[in-house]
Image (cartoon, rainbow, N blue to C red):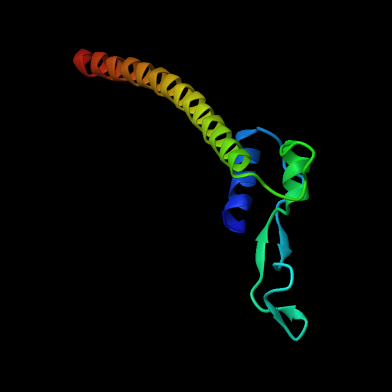
Length: 118
């Protein structure tokens, strides 16, 4: 997977409350590649494997690679967490809408009664 995707996974996981990632992204270049006069020719951003391991405690004792199974699991858990938050917010908003509709109905009834009295 591409390094940008790793950053997205950590960001999604953080939003979902799975685990706050310590590293939001680290600039890096591939070892031995992408150099221009000693400077990165094309930079990348994303967690290095050590950051991913520290944030999620995955890959067992190996903190030098990111397993596609682990990144997929983190992504799925993040999506599920975000879905749960969205459902909770939707229930709260629906309840608020119902309360406001009841208030509106009561006000409309009062207006109709006042108009009928005249």
